[in-house]
Length: 191
Image (cartoon, rainbow, N blue to C red; front, side, top):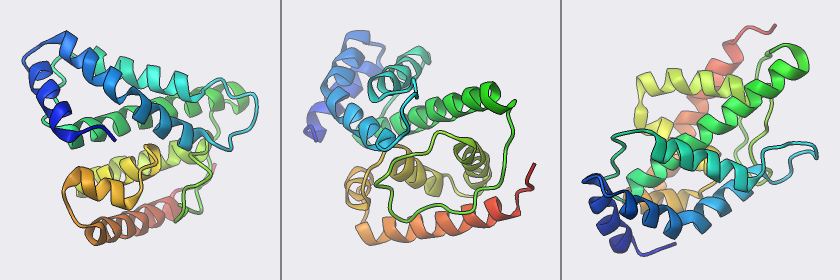
């Protein structure tokens, strides 16, 4: 990972509207964003048109396309990048479902503890997105941990470093979020 101080200085400049500074931030962190995307899309079936490069580029468009997006520090930037990746993945899954089955949705029965296989680009991710919206209304911090862990593919240790919290507290947040999401997903009606 890049030195947090360097990114913070660039983010400060970007916050004042310096587009060049924002582009420099994105160029500096591109490899990290690409690695996150590659981890998340690992193990997907052939035929998916969403690859790691496309995911990073779509997330980039969301990052710079949103006027007034300000990032206080590296943690805030990665939280927003994870949220942008979530949005791209969910939109992609919705589009595939609409094309494949007319948008049929069904109940998600698990949210895996280990995420080595990456995010599934199917109806499960759409249902998870809906559950995350409910979690966000209850506890936005837990939602951010899920986005960083599940959609950005960061480890508990990496999230702890970004948020300047203990790994143990991130692990507790991850467990609380999983329990909340599983309860919502198991209540969801099947279609």
